[in-house]
Structure formats: C-alpha cells, structure tokens
Amino acid sequence: MQNTNKGFISIILAIVVAALVGGGISYYYNTQKLGQKIPVVVADFETTLASKISSSATSMELTSASTTAGSNLSGYLCFTIETEYVCGTASTTNPVYIESMIRGIDPIDGDLEVASLKEEHRRGSSVKITNHPQLTILTRIMSGDETYPNALTYDASVVVNAASATNTIPNLQYVNTVATSGAAFANYDTTGIVRLATSSQLTIGTATSSAGEYLVVPSELVHASSSAKALIPISRTTGKIDQGWLDLTESFTFTGATAFASSTFNKTLQVTGTSTFATSTITNLNVLATSTLTGTTTFGAIPILPSATPTTDYQVTSKAYVDDKALLYFEVNPATAGATTSNNSSGWVDWDLGSIISSAKAVEIFIAGRPDNAADDKAGVRYNGSSISRMYPADVFGTAGEGWNLTLIVPTNATTVVETYGTPTSWAEGYKFTVLGYWR
Image 1: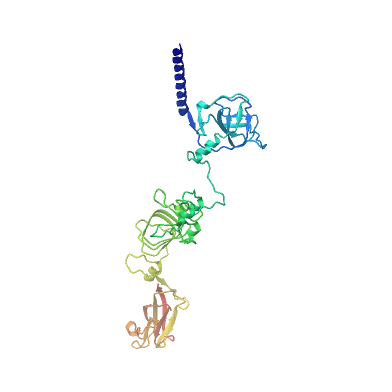
Image 2: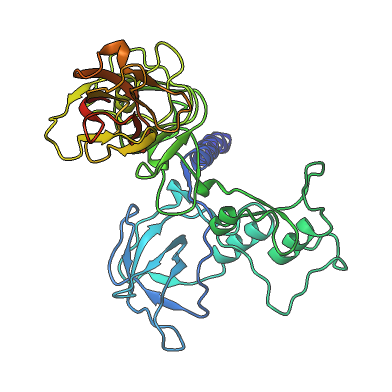
C-alpha cells in the first residue's frame, strides 16, 4: 500500500513537473517585447486598488496617488500588485488612474510582458513601488542588454580630452574637434575639409571661407526651376534647362550659328552669325553678318537699305541708287522766270539754273540768234568748269542775216550752273538761251 501511494505520488509529481515545464514553455513563447523605458522611482509609496482589475486590464484606479512628500504621482511608473509587476503612466488629469499599462512583467527582463504572469486582482489589493522592475531595467541598460531611451549628456564640468582614458565615452564636442583637428583643407590634389557656400558667396564667386576652406555648392542651391534668389540651374529629366532661367524681356545677341523654328521676338534681335528662321515674328532685327533667307519673306513695310552702292548683279538696290541711274525728263515752261538768258560778250558766262532745275543730271537748252557774219558768229553751252570750247559757228546751222537756232544737251553738277557763249549779232542782246527741260 505504501508502495502504491509512493507510485501515485510519483505520478502526481510527474504531472506537476510536466505542468511546470509546460508553463515554462508557455512562459517563453507567450511573451511580448516592449522595449526599454526608464520608469520614475518614488520611494516608500504604497496604496491599494480602488477597484477590481482583470488579468487583461490595461488601466487601474488607485486608492491614493499621493507620495510621502505630499505630491501626486506623475510620468511612467512601475508597481507591484501583490505578486504581479506592472508599469503604466499616471493620468495627467487624475493621477489615481494608471493608464497604458504593461502587465505580467518578467522578473529578469524588466519590460517584457509574460501572459502567464498576468493575474486578476481584487479591490483593496496591495500596490507598491518596489525595486523591480526599475532596477532590472537600469541593470539591463547599463549592461548593454537594452538601449538608452534618451541621449546621454555630461555635466558642464566634465572635460573629455586627449588625456582622458582611452575607454572614456567622448562627448560631441570632443568628437567634432578630433574629426577636424589637423585635417588638411581640400584642394585639387588633396582630400580634406571644405565648407558649404551661401547663395551670396556663390553670386560673387567667393572661392574660400575666411578660415581658408574651399567653398562647395550645397544641394539646396541647385534647382531645375528658378526662383527669386541666387541658385545654380540643373537640367530637367529631359536634359534641357527650364526656360524660366532666362529673362525673356532682355535683348539677346547670337554670335554663332542659330536655328529658330517658330518664334516671336518682341524685342531687338541682333544676329552676328549664321541664323536660320522658319516661321518667326521679329519686332526689330539687326543683322550684322551675312544672312540667307531660303523661304518666302514678307515685309509689312518697305525696308530701308544702307546708302552703300551695290556692286554685284543680284544685290538689292535702293530707291536712291535707282533714281541716280535712271534719267527722267522734266519739261520747263519757257516763260518761267530765269528760264531764258542772253550772251553777246564773246566769252563764257555762268548761268545759274538753281531756281528752275533740282538735282538735274543734264539740261536741254535751245539757242537762237541772227548772225551778222556766219563765219565768225558763234554760240554754245558747256558744263560748268569745262575747258572744252563747246561753241558752234553760225554758218554751220544758218545764213548771215537770217534766223539761226541750235538745241544742246549739257550735263550739270550739284551747283546747277552751266556756261553760255555768244558773239554780238544784229540782235542787241546777242544770242538767246532758253531751258526746254532737264533730266534727273
């Protein structure tokens, strides 16, 4: 019987051990890792639950949230409810309420939830702030098993320098100093320190900082589109520069070969090189070099050409050039004042025709008279300043004592002056000279 009881007890122990092992397995697989967070430590705090909580509750109400110093709980805190460890945040509106709790905290890992350790607690259950899990969390953080939740800082009196132990944790100031201490300034041959340039420095082309580092372009000053500040253009994904980088209200000078498809130029376009225009509207075109127009060109107004004289067959001529070469005849009324004169001086006499002709190339003059001696009487007209004795004896064109006349065409110059010649005749005034017309 005793052996039978021993066997029965053995069976019971095996079941208990199996349960414990199973519980252990459940313990390790039914857990939740929540990450490290250092709780606020409050000494000698003890109270009770104001109401019952279930094993799945994530908040609880305390009977009191007052510390021994008379202040209320605040922030993230950890508690022991009977044998269960929990952590949560005191409500900012009513600190007796602890919210966002984690339950069943592992006795070794201070912020790991274990489902099997979560319990139901009755109203009036003891609630204390104990060393666990605060010390456990700190121990794991200090041992490197967890990470610090915030950046660590030294007191201002702590100095870290080259004389400190090699395993000292350095501060940011020391790291920055060591990182740049003794490093060379970068140049075209040496890797080293540079400094980011400001937009104003880029605008005036500043090469180095006041300390001597070469200035480099920061990415925020490089854009595909322009704005109202100094920037460096970069092409769009098409490989083209955005048109917004150009001030299209300014005048442009193209000195190389330029091709325009369909364009409208509202300002002066000055072309000094070879240019090709398809369909373009140009307000003011100034061409300083050879240009070739291969399509139909329509002028809305008559173009003004230079005063230069054309020298080859297919050069465009101006009206002034055509007028200069063409001779148009203009008749003159003999009754016009100044259109008639006489000469019996047996010498060349200037005759100013300025009141009759204007910019004439040649003038037609009628000569009439009655020679007394056909062999000796003479009359003529010549170009002003000519040395040619352009006079004609009367016996060639008439008989002595009879009427005699002759028509001559004489070139003129800018002074519109010609010279007349006549000998004395039976007419008191000698020979008469009358302008019939002129060419210009």
